[in-house]
Length: 198
Image (tube, rainbow, N blue to C red; front, top):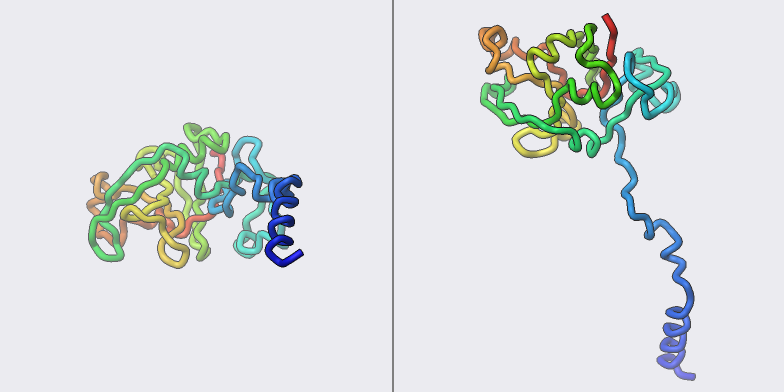
């Protein structure tokens, strides 16, 4: 048997056998979830992840975050929520920019937290910056969890991947402040929210 006949016979034989590739990962119809970008803890519903793991949740551990349950959001889960678009003037260049993402209250509702109840939320950024915002102000100023800046996802190392943001130009009490003072309640690099009941 020459080489061509051998290859043709081998190919026919392989075609008649069940394909091993179909039984493996290639057969998956769902994509694996992406990495968690936002973890919501505190006064939430049942959650979708367990307690803090001090060994694997290093950044949260170093920043003093503690929880028994949490709701973790990947990028796709956040972008699946109804989104709004705002166009505030940003402090970094003094120009209006388009930001898009779900309302912060919608994100909280998705966790089972009662976003209409009293209390506060602690917004924590990857650099350790944390700011306390009342749930009343989250409603009043229509905070969003921005996932896009000027039509693009925000990179880690820039202002993203998430930014708690308000359209400060639309609210007279915020617009009256200098641009650099309008966003003290708006951490970029947002990665953790703690819901606190009043």
